[in-house]
Image (cartoon, rainbow, N blue to C red; front, side, top):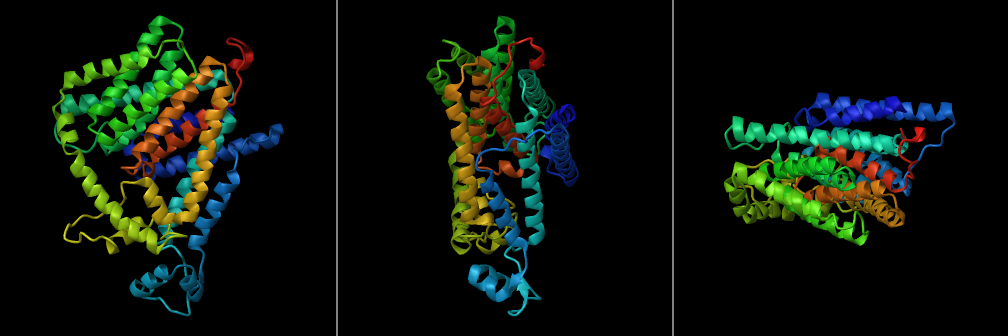
Length: 433
């Protein structure tokens, strides 16, 4: 179990270092390590006669995976025409070797679907590993501290390179990420967790230190100039305040969130509000351009409602539905992860995963109400608000297509879900280490 924990921690540190692992080599490394971690976990369970833990309604994920496999199996073209008439029409029009009496697949590009399927399985295995590896308070605290200090280092690096080395030059990149929005998506998962840890700390000096660290991470989100990330972070912090008051946790220490915002405001003012004001001034223009892409994509949902165009196939088919053809823009992604998923996987798969995630979220909040341990309640609230933040941000971006962001999402989801239902031993006991 120690080896599996080390592999998971290595993944968390490694994945954001190379442009969010969007390249084939770092992505392959992450996928291989996730598979090895799970196989190691299964082997250890067999040897130790240990029963693996699975989330509720995991059968929904199984059905989803089977439906994605259905996209890449060969079927007679007459059957394809019945199941998805528009897929049949597209293949008839654009495939050189298409025959009405031959065999085809639902997916427009099966290779892209296989790659997307492997990626999903890899990250879901990380979620399962977290559920089974992390059991003791010491493990939870170690990995949370690693996440907080990783966020601090990435934030420092991003601010220094952007505002001191590049001298505020126009660039979409920020820190180690190739896009400022994806850096923000990564950090808005860590920021609420760092605030939660500051709330939990009993030592006043530690509380001040981690409050200041949280302020640095939050300020870096704003200084990255990600509008969606900044707005999502603020909403998640307001919701975090609501949960803390509802759970009556840490007495009247909600001032820490206010302190984080004030410290963050001061740090941002040192770099200047000019770039942020400019980005916010063109918010409506940015939303309008993204809405035009969304509206064109709705026609794809209409044509491929049940089974989609094929996982990972949006970039291959969208140009056929793009109305603004005079604008020479090629879209790899939709800037709305949820709608793109519906376009690619269909409404059936979207419904299955929606029920699965909603059941997980309900389970987290239900178990939170029953917990009395201040550490567990703090971490669950921080983790849940981080998940909420990136989930909101993904309505206007393609965060879950960035391996590092997706990996941290599944990791944090597993950590939060497991922490909500884990009862810890008293501090200092051997079982707690």
